[in-house]
Length: 169
Image (tube, rainbow, N blue to C red; front, side, top):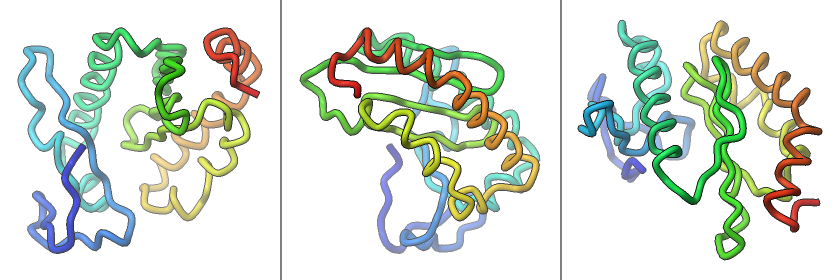
């Protein structure tokens, strides 16, 4: 994950990022050749991310890198992989249960690492307008549609999570 500290600068505008505010950060992710995606291990202002001329291409590369990373890790199982969502679960009972479910809304930069036993109750918090306000309106609409689709899938996903992890409520 990107190192975050007081005084760090956005790589796109060179202004200091307020670490107490909302900002975008990603983990280091490989491209199709195994090399790190430029600025994939960085934090930046949301506004700077979406001001990039190549914002969609950059986010597509990050999403593809996340997908490759999850597929290559035998601890993770992908439950949903479509044009809007990437949802994966790590059912290992020895792990901290706060991070057993990973949800990514593609082409938005929004993702959540969730506790297995908090799904689907966590869906309302994920749709928090204050958190989503950092996104341009068309991206907010994409997140809202993806979360609505996730809400519709919740019964099937919950059943699959129960199959994978007996502690899911």
